[in-house]
Length: 479
Image 1 (cartoon, rainbow, N blue to C red):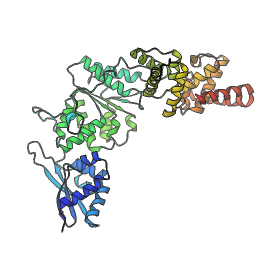
Image 2 (image 1 turned 90 degrees about the vertical axis):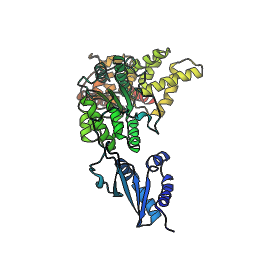
Image 3 (image 1 turned 135 degrees about the horizontal axis):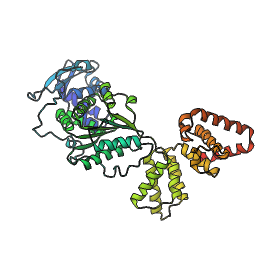
Image 4 (image 1 turned 60 degrees about the horizontal axis):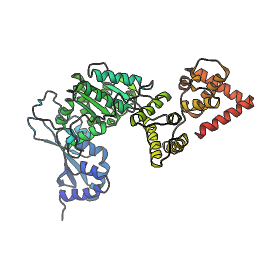
């Protein structure tokens, strides 16, 4: 007995369901309807062009295998794509295309319209309550603790912090639109983005501020495609006064979502609304982003946040302890700040671990306890040796204050400590010569090279100096 299109598709779904995550199956395959089966060609109906393109990009191999399993080697698949026409005539159009033929929909005249002049008299659905997403109240999604008051300023983040505060005081009216914040993970860009939003809400209670992660934005857009309300989704975002979008790099490769965000960006920018974007890399290093959108990221100010220096790390720990009403010996705070230097989250995590260990085991917080905890913590986080840490070891060894290395004095013992710091920094870190020089008395790369050559010469000719170097090397490696 000849199979019907429904039977064939149901059999295909059983195979597909076993080969992909259930949520993906639910999102991308359950909405599909089998239409007909003729001459070993199965026609399926998909809700939209975006839906069709996603299937072609991510699941075409799986689809072909299941179709051929059901219909034989001659089996083929065709799509019937529902295309949204317009708001006055909501009847969908259907375009038939064979599988793996994206060119058929390269520039359809009935692709998603973006009518910026459309009236807003009817209530626009809120994408934060789209089925399938966590239902939350329509609020700014800002974290109260991430305020400017709790943001520690240092040389590493001063430009970003100053620009952020200027934006918060006058959103949409400064040259910093968009304000593009970028850094590696754990250096405070999300904190600063929330701080901007909180300050705007304090200064302008009537303004609509929204913080949203890019992954959340993408998920909402996909749901809007499934529910055929893309334009309502776009218009909701176009009504925001200050839009803060975190981790914008996750738009990479998502062409349709980029297209939608492009229209949102344009409308907000043209109406002097503020955009704040964060990313893990500067605009020039972003891949998979359309040039027209990338150029807009460069319109305002791109400000980076660098790893905090020693003083800033100590200030962060002290602020955290003060906020929690906890006292801790200065030597423990300094040890923490020296030991973890690349990530503020890891630094705060280590602090919490020490406090928990002290509380649970009823032990006082001592340097010995801190070392035990940090040894375990550092192994799990693969800590790299820093220039600050090397300077601390060298200066402690020679009983010198750390800031002496950055002084202009030409005293023999300080010059020697500075040269050893440069030598070990070149040996144990990935920092460039220019960066090492900057951290060791604001010297240039030629001075660093000269210092390394001097140390190597003394190792070969001075027995006592060689002992110094060997002992220091062991101390640096052991910590």
